[in-house]
Length: 215
Ligand SMILES: C[S@@+](CC[C@H](N)C(=O)[O-])C[C@H]1O[C@@H](n2cnc3c(N)ncnc32)[C@H](O)[C@@H]1O
Image (cartoon, rainbow, N blue to C red):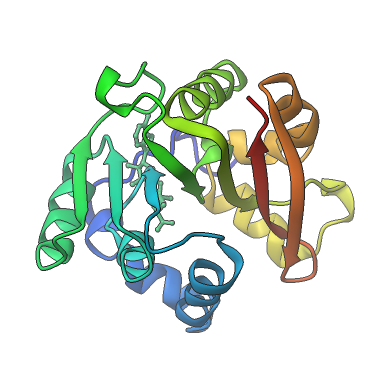
């Protein structure tokens, strides 16, 4: 593996230029792509409360805040939290909270949210931490709430295109390759979620899944 960092905690220059990096590596297609996902593929209403786990610098939160009552973004990186707070300060319906999403959520969030989102981050957690995240999302969602995951798709890595292998091998944390064979649907079911919708993008290398909490 080229990159020994086992984590998706983004700090330093990567945090400072996170949006620019994402735009650059996607040849400036990411802005349109994520706007489309947040505005057209995420089922929310003006009354919805949404949690973003690993909110980063707040790009998705800002898009969602234009359609919902409240967005609470949780993150652990001081650099990302600082950027997110600055970027979202004029949005009165966005709250940015320092929180390790592997840890149990405070009681105030029990059954509080209509939807939760984790974007470009789930692959970077160890399997036992993914289990904790599923349980935490179950705790903070209302019955029937939605859990959206934007991440790599499940695939046979040996048959993936060379440019994707470069991304995974040289730039991603080692857990990313493991995620490509992670049984997402089965694990979601184990924690009480049904996968009702799945969209695939960029030659099926990425997925956006909608899981519905059946509690
Ligand atoms: C790759 S970034 C994605 C940011 C944002 N979701 C987006 O799509 O632009 C992953 C984010 O997850 C955060 N993160 C990583 N581990 C975390 C943890 N245990 N608890 C909370 N946030 C975490 C990182 O600090 C980073 O901001």
